[in-house]
Amino acid sequence: MKVKDVLAATGWELLTPTLPALENEIQGGYVADLLSCVMAGAQPDQLWFTLQTHSNIVAVASLTGVAAVVICEGAAVGADTVQKAAEQGVVLLRSAAPVYETVKQAIALGL
Amino acid sequence: MKDSLDLLARLGPGASLSKIHELIREVTVGQVMTSPVYTVSSWDTMEVVRDSMRDHRISGLPVVDNDELVGLVSTADLIRALEEGRVTASVADYMTRKLVCARTDEPILEALRRAEKTGVGRMPVVDAEGKLRGVITRGDIVTGLLRSLQQAYSAFEQQRRPHYFFEALESDETSLILRYRVRQGDFTHGGHASARIKQALLRIGASAKFARRVAIATYEAEINLIIHTTDGGHIVAEIHPDRITVVAHDSGPGIPDVELARQPGYSTASDLAREMGFGAGMGLPNIERCADEVNIWSAVGVGTRVEMIFYVPPEEIQPE
Image 1 (cartoon, rainbow over the protein chains, first blue to last red):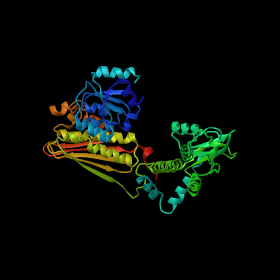
Image 2: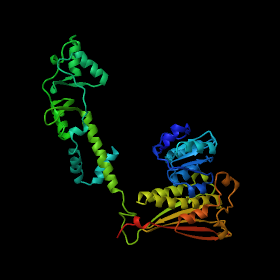
Image 3: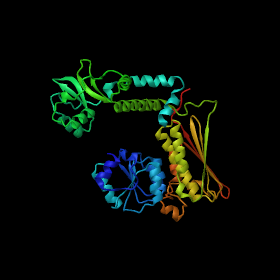
Image 4: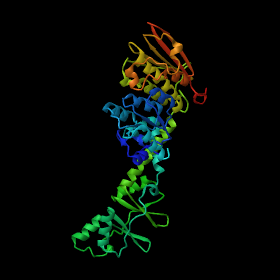
């Protein structure tokens, strides 16, 4: 399943502009707010679910090669983070629901 | 435009034009023509022509009677019929019978030459038996040429990508040094050096997996410089054909107990850093997991030097 398909099926919000990474194929997900855990555990092509919104999540997403970042609980995301993500081709999605419910949505889609 | 110039430059002088010519010659009319086509018969009225042109947004229609191509009717012919107030007249009265045709199997360059010589904008395309197979316009030809250039360029790019790590560089011992300054407290640029090192490795032929391993360890070292140093430090990556050494060094404060710092979960990160998701105490363990060798030297009041060595996977090493 592609990032754009998940976006369409869940109604999550797309924070970044239309990027080529919307075509990324997703293979499961990873949940953590500790960046070192993400660096150690997140695999390329996973969705990364987090509450972190500062600009360093872009570096973490880009270095680990995750398919997209899903920011949960409708957390406020600064313009600097969005801009950096757009520059580095990292897709930022936002769900209004808490992490648990957000992940359940992804699971319901078969991820 | 830049891409095609680049292609010319890369194909080399002399060889370039003939190579491109060869590629273009391979494209046939059949590959770029529009097919199937809308047609009318010579006993249809000009009204039928008008409706078809309007509905399909086209400016010319081949005229076919009993499966045989007998003419071509264009917008110019239609305008003439409209001016004369004879839209109910038959197509036979207005169509052009002298046809300039293209053949499905001929190169598009030949078709283009014929179109230019005769001044026609569109040509019916016929097969070896003279049966109508499609229509080709100058626009179709240009699109076809551009597409074949694009394909040639992609194929060329693919071919030019290094197959082995450090291909194309030769010396008794080649290495490349990338140096980055990392500032204390500069979370905004955290990951800047690691991202650039990763990009550099990919560009010179490393696999995504290997580049990722180096980038993750480097990121942890980079973040440590941002969080824990008094005055930031440097990341220096030295790239050899068979290994990569990344050194993160700073001038203080130094680690009192290196063994303790290496333990998973141990961290002295500030509350601010922890709020941002740092300080999990997983930095050094992550580095040790990703790097093949890790050497840490530290003295309180002097500074810290973390050296990480990554061996290029055997299958990525350029053969002798």
